[in-house]
Image 1 (cartoon, one colour):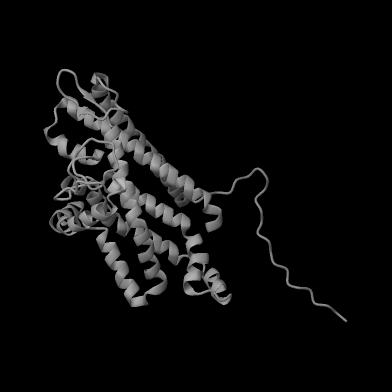
Image 2 (cartoon, rainbow, N blue to C red):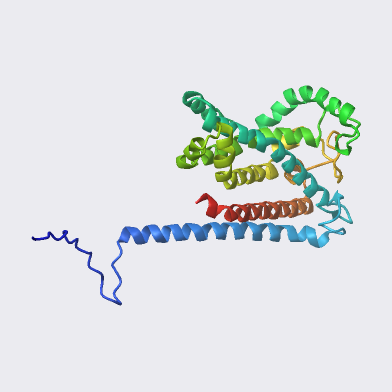
Length: 327
C-alpha cells in the first residue's frame, strides 16, 4: 500500500545574511515624502509658536499688570495693564457650554442615521449634516441675531422665573439676550455637524458580529446599541467632541456678532456684558489697534494657541487609552 505525499510548496528564497534587499525607487520616494510631510507639520507648528511668542514679547515687557491673572484689558497709554484671566474664562465657558449642548444631540443624530433610519433617509440626512458643516460662521451669526435672539428671549425669562434660585440663571435677564448662553447655543449649532459626522462614521464601523451576537442573545435594538455600539465608538465620540471643542474655542465672527462683551469671571449665563472670548476680542479690536495693542492681542492669541494644544493633547491621551478595546 503506497501513500501519496502532499505536494511540497516552494519556500521563497531568503537573502543571504548581511545582505539587504533592493528597494524600489517608488517606495523610497513615497517613504521619504511621508517622512518629510510629518516633519513639516512639526516645523510649521513650532514656527507659529515662535512667531506668536516673538510678536507678543514687546507688549509683555511693557505690561504693568499680571498677564495671566488680571482681568483688566487696557494695553495702551502711559501705563498699559492687561491680563487674560477673564478672556480665558469666557472662552472656556462658551466652548464647554456649546459642547455640553451639542454632544448628546450629535450622538442621537448619529445613532439614528447609522442604526434606525431607512437607507434612503439616512443617506439624505448624511448629506444634510455634511452641508451644514460648510456654512460660513458669519451666516450662523446672522441667524443668531435675526432669529434666535427673539425666539430665545422668552425662554430665558422662563428660566429666570422658575429656576432663578440657581445662581447661573439669576437675573436680570438681558433684553436682547446677547449673553454667553446665546453665544454657546450658536456655537453648539456650529459644531453639531462636525461631531455628528465623525460619530456617525465611528458607529457604522462597529463589527457586525458584535451587533449580531447581542441580538442573538435576546437584546433589543437599544440594548444592542448600549452594549456593543456605544462602547466600541466611545473613543471616536471623544475625538469628535474634541474636534468640535477646537472649533468652538477658536470661533470668531459668530461670537462677536451675538455676544455683548465684558470682562467678568462669573457664571451668570442670562446677563449681558459679563463675558468675552479671546478670538472675538482679537476680531473686534485688531482693525483699530496700535502697535502695542496688536502685540497684546497676539499675546492673547498665544494663550489661545496653548489652550487648543493642551485640549488636543488631552484628547489624544483619552483616545489612546481606548485604542486596545477599539482594535
